[in-house]
Length: 203
Image 1 (spheres, one colour):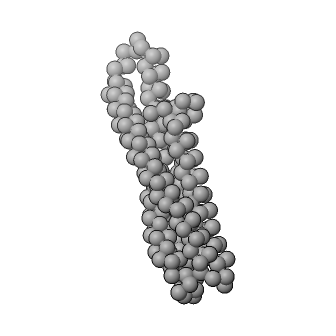
Image 2 (cartoon, rainbow, N blue to C red; image 1 turned 45 degrees about the vertical axis):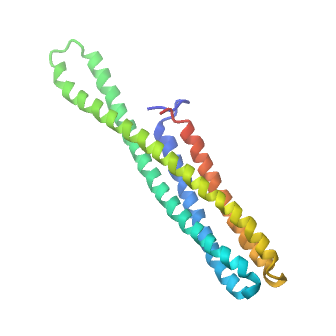
């Protein structure tokens, strides 16, 4: 089972799983940033009332991003395993067919037909499962990408509120806004690369 460029599916599937594991780690950074934002907004008092309201959205974004990234990573690992199993079954099927061709006139050739049929059926089931996993995971990645666009808006709003909090806290609040934006950008990079890899899989 090859991609359009001749590389095995499981190579790309494993790479996607690795990319999404990285995305999960970055998502936890947003969660930590959300905690820091809440603590700092409380210290800043009334001057950061607007920012404090935004921390709830940052916290919600963090929870959603961590949960979605973890789930997608888990699905990517399953997809990688399916791809590897499919590749092994395809290899076995090819060996069966080569053996049949070489022993086309052997009197006991028909004895391997049941095993050949089982392997063909297994390969078909695995292919269908893999393709389904690819489509489902691709949809989840698109959904996560849409969620992350919210982070860009939140970061911009946070910078505006930071400037209204007073000089004592403005710089620290701006750092938090920057951290949210940078973490979201990192996750988007992993998501987009994963989507590019899916585009190379000839399903």
